Length: 255
Length: 292
Image 1 (tube, rainbow over the protein chains, first blue to last red):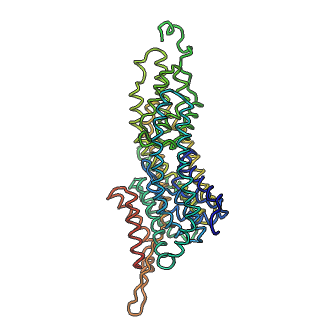
Image 2: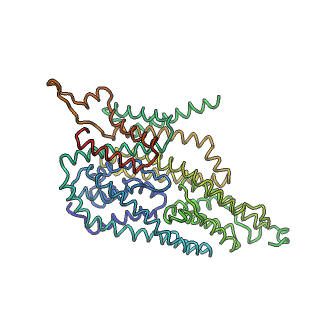
Image 3: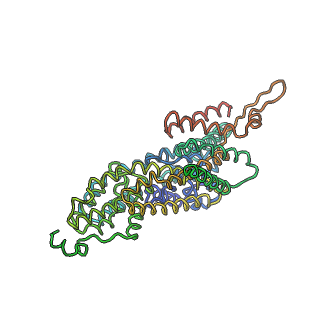
C-alpha cells in the first residue's frame, strides 16, 4: 500500500468522530479507551484486517491502564490507533515502530478531546434556555445534535488531513530513522511500557491483600508458557479462584 | 389545587402524575446511557445528559407547566458521575424522589414533599462515591478482564480480539446498569447505601478484584518483555546475565518492572502521565546503553 485513498482516509476520520463524539452511547467507552476496535476498522477499511489487528494488539498493551479516573484520559488510544495503524500498514513498519508513533499522537489527541468539552461549554446557555421553557425539541437539539456536530467538525477534518497528507510522510520518516539501535530501543520501550498499564490497573483495583492472586497468575503464565494455555482457560481459573475466595471469606464472617 | 378537589379523588384528576412503569425506567436509562458523554461541558459536566434521560419521566410526573420547567432546570445543575454505577443508580433514585414530590404537590401537601434541596443534595452527595466504584470496576476491572481474554486473538490477527471485549463489555454494563436503575427506583435514597455498603455488592467487587488481578498477572507474564543483553567473559568463560537470571527465577525482570511502577504509584501518588514519562525515559536510557 502506497497511500490511503480519499475514501479510506475519510472513513477512518468518520469512525474517529463517531467514537470521540461519544454519540454511540456508553458503548463508546471501550471504543475510546481501547485502540482495538479502531484498529479493526482501519483493517476493514484498508482490507488488511490481520496485519492491522497484530499492530493494534501491540498498541493495546501500552494502553492497558487507560481507565480515566474522573473522566480525564491522559491519552486517546482510539486516535493513536487511527493514525499509527495506517502509518504502520503504509510503511510496512513493525508493531514496535507503530507504538512509537501511537504515543505522541495519543497525547495530542487528548488535548483535542478536552477542546471538545470547551466547545460544548458554549452550548450550555442554549440548554439552559430550553430547560427553562421545558422545550423538549430544543433540548434534544442542544444536548445531542449540536455537541455531536461540534465533534464531527472538530475530528473529521483534522484526522482526515493527518491521514491523507501526514501518514505517508510519517511512514517514510520512521523508515528512514529506524533500524539497528533505534529499533531495539523501540522494542524495549514497547515491551516495558506494558508494565505501566498493568501497574495502573493493579493500583485502581487497589486491594493490596489480593495481590497474591496477581503473583500466582504471573508465575503460572511465565512457567506454563510452553503449555500454551489460552487466556479463556486462564480466565476460568481466575473465576474459580474468585469463587473460592468469596466462598472462604463469607464463611468466616458467618461464624 | 383547591380543597374541594382533594375531597373528590385527587389521584383521578388530570393534573395527577401518571404512574411510573418499568418501561419509563428503561426509557430514562437508555436515554442517559445514550447521551452520557455527548454534551460533556466544563461548567455542568454531564448534567445535560442526566436531564436528557429524565425528560420523559418528568413530563409524566409534572402536569403543571411551571413545575415541569423547575424540574428541568434543577437537573441542569452541575453533575458528574460514572455512567453505570452512578448514572444508573441516580437515575432510579431521582425518578423515585421526583415521583414522591410530584404526587405530594398534586395532593396539595407540598410541605411533605421531598424538597428541591434534598433532590439536588442526594445527587451531588452520591455522585462522587458511586463514580469512584464505577471507574474502578467498569473501566478499570471488567473492561480489562475482557481485553485480557481477547488480546491473544488480536495478536494472532483475529478480528475477535476487538469484537469480543467491545460486545461483552457493552452488553454487561448495559444490563447491570439497568439493574441499578431499577434498584435505585425501588429503594429510593436507601439504594446508594445498599450499593455502597451492601454485602452482595461488596462480594461481587471482591470477586471481580480477584479475577482482575489474576488476569493482570497472566498478561504481565505473557506480554511485559524486559530482558538484559549483558554478557561478561571471565577467563574465557562467557556469562550471559539473562541466562543466569532465568536459572534463578524466570520472569524476574518484567515482574520487577511492574512492581517498580506499582510502588511508584503507591508511594509517590497516582499520576499516570508522570509514571509513563519516567518509565519511558528509564527504558530508553537502559536500552540505548545496552543494559536492556
